[in-house]
Length: 546
Image 1 (cartoon, rainbow, N blue to C red):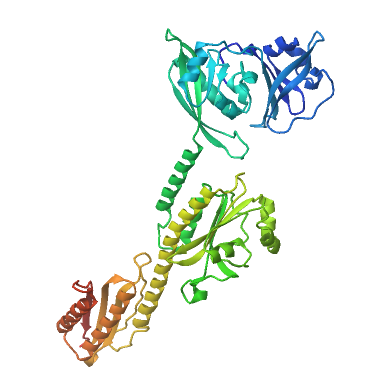
Image 2 (image 1 turned 90 degrees about the vertical axis):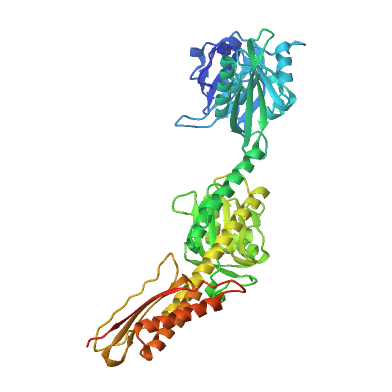
């Protein structure tokens, strides 16, 4: 019930019955209806008020309404229409039933009732009009459809008594605020109002209803179901978040983890990212995936600590047969949505016993496997599952997951290609650099080369070249740029330096010839009509012990 209700509460007969059937609350309205004072009934079984005796079983569901024969204190039998709401246990308080029935307002409103007519005219959608005591005066058919009960049953009840859920407390406080301030108010809330099992987003627009003298005589509330626009806004926010968070580095594992982090908990309760191992296919993903397929776990994320739903950990591999959703999605190139209720995963879970046990243990009921594709190649699969959320994946959820995964796929492919190019460039560079420095009588030299982790492998090189007369040339150079091209250019320049050093050129002459070579390489590397971008720095020093 509302925290603050400044009006007479006796216009509604209200009682609270614990889940054990004992009366725990009895208001003045209930005393007026049946004649029993509170101290005579509290702590006793509510079934004692039934005319027929016995202890009926609690009704199913969270709401019940119907006519019950109750016994008055003086012995009379009264048929009374009751509305009951079940309130689940919360904050240490046991569950109970809120039972109400209106004592006033049951008579239909008079024709030409200015308050009711004004309320109905001022709002074109599902509306309800509450009087200056915040009790229902009128509602139209659209609002009755939302509530699920006709107006004649609810007239005279408060909003908190009509709904009985915690959200109604906030709405009733909004009504009171409008009534006392005379200013309109918008309240957004979440309620389940139909049988699809989903919480809908409602915008309650409250406005004061005034008489001819301008005095506030009630409040009109118009309810708008804004679920679709709310979900569209959330999807857009998630896509924007994905574009910012995914691809922050050129690291495949980090990018896969960012994809999983974005999807949990916004879209799923448990997400796995499994990728093909390019080494098994010669360094590139296959043009066509054929089941069974072996995948390596790149990342996963769960709403539960420790990711207990996972069967394998990051870095481990698993083979998926052709009847698994993962292999099916990768071979088909499209998202595969499955549900436990329809039996889509029965064969897969029966074949993989451990996975089936995890599904039953955590109550996983829905899953969708989204192929990770870029440049026409399938790189892996993202599997999104739900077990905390009661609702299954919708077609809009599938589209959202595909859009986020497509963005991540480009980042994963870029990271994969960068890693492959970096490894190739590093291997080329190491093959071109001296594996061991020559031993000379003039000096003892040692070296260590560590490529930059973030900047990428470039065209750095060093060398020690024995010359005539016990002299030794020491070389350190760097080609502008990174990657395979820079490493290849470095190899050409290193060879040129050694060749020029062998003909015993002076350092200034050697560097002049080397500069001419760099200019020719720059001209050769440029496209049609465009200059190249080859540049280098080089230190050439000659040590003469004599």
